[in-house]
Length: 241
Image (cartoon, rainbow, N blue to C red; front, side):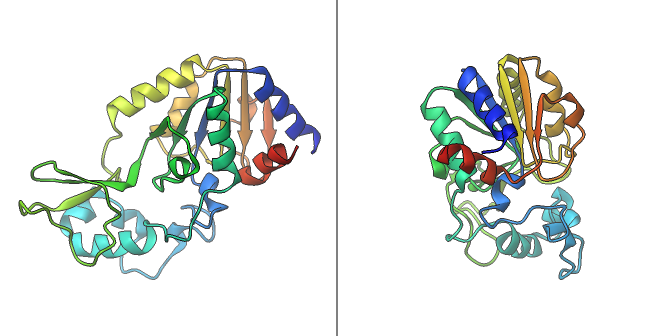
């Protein structure tokens, strides 16, 4: 275990009000692609529209069937995808009572699959859906072909935040509350370029901030500890002692 990981373990052992804020890099080590890397979703040129547009509310409304084709192929993870060491380590910290919340930009549900209970999903989840007409809730991955419809005739929309849509206000307020009172904030697997989620970091005024990310990000200069590595690898090192 190198010195930086030892320091991280020391922080975790010291503080009992820890919050984790993570992004796509938490799940890439489970085999889920991120968005902006050279092999990410935004580099895929195999569709007739740019991925950023295909994940917008405008596209959903105008080309609903094509949206679902893309959504099923690119956004719903196959059943073989499982939580990695990062998800499992965070779940164990919560069970110990040290980790108060996981705040995630991911929509894959892997934190819950690993056993985490208090997960604030800023961008929603592929496992929740609702009818746009009657608001009936559907707990499914919408993997069937075609445009999913409710018995009332309304289109069933994934409960994920598309471009041009606002984040859930209640979820944002909870995230701000947890971050503002945390002693230790661990930021992992996120470039902190997507707003308003990235702006949550400014509410932290606790003791220590740690950033774990493979590449530099804009908050590195604010952090007490920066670890430039994969987050699953870092947490696995702690698990192994």
